[in-house]
Length: 292
Ligand SMILES: Cc1cc2nc3c(=O)[nH]c(=O)nc-3n(C[C@H](O)[C@H](O)[C@H](O)COP(=O)(O)OP(=O)(O)OC[C@H]3O[C@@H](n4cnc5c(N)ncnc54)[C@H](O)[C@@H]3O)c2cc1C
Image (cartoon, rainbow, N blue to C red; front, side, top):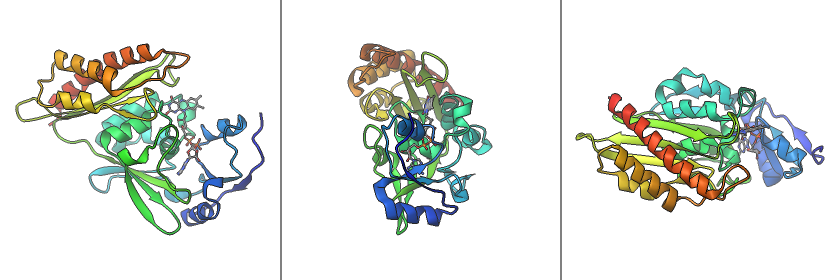
């Protein structure tokens, strides 16, 4: 099918893009890599009357590390972030997660900000952002604000961005000492959206017990699912197989409500999540021991 008719704008500065967003509000859809928006338009699931193409706004493509975070411009290609040395060195969880997004061809068009603004519960980047406590810079023609990851995602394909705002930058906190990270998922075929997966972060205290942990899951709820009961139960425990198995049990039985889909029943998604939790925590714990 062809998309419904729309007006097309290609601003060449952030200022001009923000002016267009102020003018058109919710009717003006930002076009990033188009890897989700264009298929939705072709299926007429999305019928924006105005497209604001951000591909000619150079201010939105950058990666830097000014302080304790890696800052990534929203229009940075997923493939650029995937191969970036700052991302690899300072945000290993993000580096490990990106190759799981679709195929290289899609990552060569898809953007970091587009994936986060799209807020697909099956996507990898929202899970990483929530696990690391990333911050999102939202700008309008009049003002700007930083939104915490926990306040950014607002359910199925929804965020707390306002109709006149664009997501312009994301700050991913850099790795910290005695902390290990792991991203893992299972898909039917490499490149498909995963049936289940998670980002795990584990910090070891002075006596080598778990002093902090974060477990965030994809495709098992309305958005990235933060397993708060499972992580609370890990604190103070020795990082061993029994503790990891219990975390997987609590996360899969108490912290998530998978819907199931054509590839996996809810029961199978819970099973996968439990098994992947054990693997991710074992790997993250090994890495935490090695990370001084
Ligand atoms: C075959 C296929 C397989 C895929 N598999 C996966 C997968 O396994 N995992 C995964 O995570 N993704 C997957 N994707 C989606 C892909 O990662 C997309 O790149 C991503 O979801 C959207 O990024 P985009 O830059 O293409 O954004 P677009 O499609 O251009 O935009 C997506 C949405 O975000 C909004 N938006 C974009 N930028 C901004 C901004 N700066 N401010 C405010 N709103 C904005 C748009 O208006 C639109 O509503 C797949 C896509 C395809 C086609």
